[in-house]
Image (cartoon, rainbow, N blue to C red; front, side, top):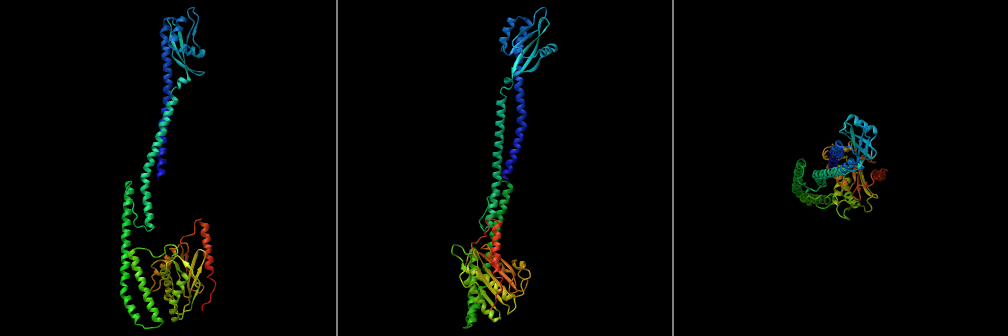
Length: 468
């Protein structure tokens, strides 16, 4: 917008300068010509009184010398009454032009080499018509015209430069508030809730800044209310958790009792984490700092050990692959465990008892893939299942589990896909980017390389594997 305003002012000012400077330059040129011929007429008029009195050469030569330059003025007296014709000075005009002026009896100008001449008729005492010729060189006709045109050009350039400078300042005054508004919107979108825009500039942009600041305040208030609500709801869970912990303590010894107590303890820790996160308003999705994260293989083994007891009770066959060696990922341990629990919980919740499932872990060059697959009926509409709050359409499904998985993957620059597994049911693929960003500095070529790597990694899991 700034440069558009400058271009408009430049075009308008240039047109105005041309519209006024060109006619004014032509007027100046005509005025210089009129001035030169006016001087020539005054010189010719100074000789006329002498011609009406005498036609003697000597006297006329003195009059011509006193009236003007001898090389620039000439007097042509025709022969009359037995007196020979007299020519004083240098003749430049043609005989036909002089004869025409003598016959018509009025002044005239004619072009000659190097300039122009003024032919002024003068009546003599004898009744004859003498012609006074005054030479006007071209330099005198154009005297001062070049300087005047240079001044006009300088004034025009100054006007154009001044208009561009004023337009640029006006553009800055209009563009800077808009730029600050854009920067504030970007900062607010990046999670900087303290971003505000100065309420200055043109009236429209000032009103936009007021509306933006009001919106930002409302967003902060809404987020604060949401955090408080999440903390309050989580705090309400502590009472039933206390009852569960007391009941679990009375179960005695045994694997089932130990697993129940471990699950209750973990649930209490998760509730405490939710309350602290809501109060502090600090996202806990991605692990920050170098060396942070967790060992995905260890988390997979730990969660499969937890779910294996329930799988044995329901007669489910299960398999774990790729978790025999450390696999570091830039994800917090609790977040990965929550994502795996959400996917494995869906398997137990939405498939019949005895349905097999598997968890595969693969460590690539720049990404880690976690595949959770089952031999159930599958998901008919994966896009709907990925939508937050919709779920798969079955009873007890809210869709929040898959949304937790999606946010975990996207926090590293990866993604989540739902498809058909080699077991015949649903396959959920979690792509975790190791460097935490999309590898697309080169545009389409790098994206195609990334897709080929994804297909190559996924193809390694499409080979049939036997369940134990």
